[in-house]
Length: 131
Image 1 (cartoon, rainbow, N blue to C red):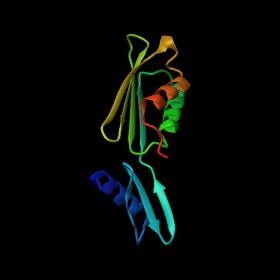
Image 2: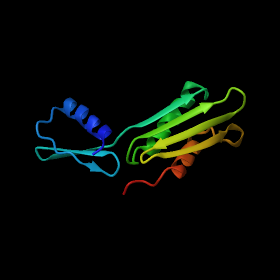
Image 3: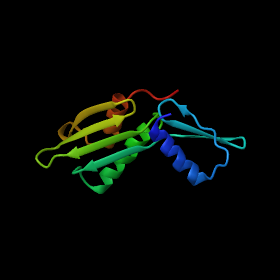
């Protein structure tokens, strides 16, 4: 089990005060906890950052929909969207497990700043859902 997973598991164990904890990695970074007949499966984080990309309401919508799209994918995901002050292009970078990395330029004139359109693009760019 990787060091990052062990560190997160230790922090989690501290928070839930499990006296007997069985741990294993399921896929890339999923954790399963078992105590007293109860089982919990925990997914790792989805992080979205946006800079110079419109108003707070648009940013909230984009962050929420990207988190939704990536929530059922295994492992840690990070999405960075940076807008340009010189034009209406946003650079989107997606980082994921197993050294996954993709980039895409979102063109405002082509309607690619719309949250639903971004969700469709992200879903197409990342590996499929875990069965």
